[in-house]
Image (cartoon, helix red, strand yellow):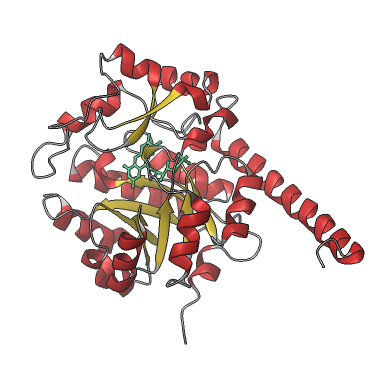
Length: 326
Ligand SMILES: Cc1cc2nc3c(=O)[nH]c(=O)nc-3n(C[C@H](O)[C@H](O)[C@H](O)COP(=O)(O)O)c2cc1C
């Protein structure tokens, strides 16, 4: 029988949302808080400074969520780039701690499929173009996450309407949308565009459980879309950055960031320095109005999502009664 991954991850009644993995921002505390609040949480494996610390984090998450009936799953984000020298040891930990979801970045999801499937896990691949989406689909990914224009971190460049439409021509499987999902109605809109679930990063940076510095969280509260700049100068890859932090770090947004790419075969702390000094956010930052616990953020998203569905029901009912579109 074909596996119903969407039903496994988002059974009826659960918010169709994954809190995105974020470099230097999401750790075990955030992932656990999300799961307890009813959303799938995640963190990138490289946020743990060593493989030993990563094991400690995985133990922490497993212990915190152990024994809960209907526990919401959590996700680990792995770098699958061929030069990432922690990959094999991280994969051993994945087999031991069995995160329900593994999301892959910077390479083919093929490298983790067999192992993650062996314990019933799900592999999702982050992609920024239809070509990469097709490659990930051909490699056997269980779900795709389309990273679109305006997303925080290393952003995509495509508009979500057009990107989803292109990918839906060849992919009918589970599809996530990342980029500026900041409210429950954004989440519902993503589904109306053709996605099955949303992936939200920026909305979770200014939470009490994130690893972001207090000044970073406050800056998000104080910022809106016009405070961002899209630039390659910080990391050599196009990302969305808070302009004032680039200025303080003395980085010209017009630069191409050549030579700043992270070298995964060595110490990635050089790449970390850029992210520590220059802070990233997605264009949905205007929705961040206060620093709050994750449970409040998820509760807000849930009630907004419900309100969006109710508004839609009223709209559809009226449209059918009155024949708005004939
Ligand atoms: C500060 C920051 C760090 C990020 N780091 C990573 C990362 O390490 N790995 C990854 O796959 N995506 C990373 N992302 C991208 C997110 O996973 C997600 O795609 C994005 O935040 C969604 O857009 P939004 O921020 O507009 O919600 C990062 C995003 C932000 C804002």
